[in-house]
Length: 462
Image (cartoon, rainbow, N blue to C red):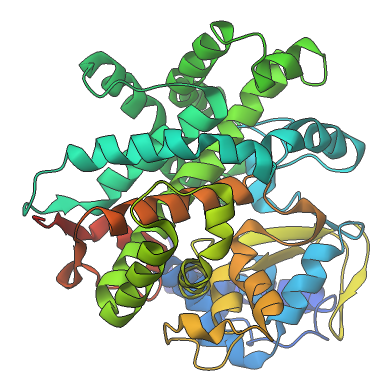
């Protein structure tokens, strides 16, 4: 059908069109350093597919704090240093949350805190803030301890188990109890089955949807995908709705809806958002905390002494948690070294500067808290809780907590997540040996956040 000349001519035309496209598009971005685009951006796309944002960061990070990269036909602005990252997060007037991630989320949790901005965001945030205050969350310490005790007692001593599965059950039940007053009866197989259907790996299908949205937005917006999303959300929303209908009239969420501050539909979308953002992230961070305590026995020994001295075997109070200074450092250093937020995005609603570079309106800006925060200190690959000294604590703790974001839009569930991590760690330290099999912690340098899913642990006999 085609002569030899056609096989030469067609690639030549494609190459010429690509050169014209690159020169046209790159006029907007030529002032921003970055690698020379490969043919059709295929080399950069290959790096991204092999190693996500970290693959791009490791390969092209030497170009500077702000770089531009062609991924296929798309141009991405990548933030590579902490000062630029903070500048981007705080400038909410110029840089919109509605980047690629949020545009995909519009079809999953419309009108939620994750995607709203301006007056609508403030309405949701001020309505929900009282529940997430430290004083309010302190009421749940005993309930969280009871959940950890039940899940811990269910483990067989000296028998390996999948750490992520156990952590999944603990953090999922804590979220369901604290936020929605849902109690999962471990002795009721039907309740356990419904709970697992509602919570297991919600982040996986959300992530899969985001990838499909990036590759082919029309397909991601199709009725097929919307039906799939609704099917995956249904078990969770059913449990939450049933719980709220049976809740005490004094329940925070019940009063919030009755007051008209949030509609029933808005509450449902916020509930899904809180679950998506709250339990898998805490689960994986918990796995890393336990991993660090196994890998560094001197850290574990010091932490054990502190917990024993302050608590003497009892359940902590909110005041006790303030006195567990070394526990705070261990959790913060774990979050700095193993930040579980791999990538985030922003879009400039007008031309503005990041560092020394003007960023054109409507550009796609990507950043990785994992990469930026980890590499913002000296000796970034070392686990050293003592790096949090009295002099630098305020600044370093901000960096370590970057998984929650920074500025006015930081995660509303920050204090709940920190409370969970500390209480679960305290319980496990107080109640026998709990170790990670270090043979199962091989870290994929491109997808380190997936490592906890491979970890195996053992509950030692006391």
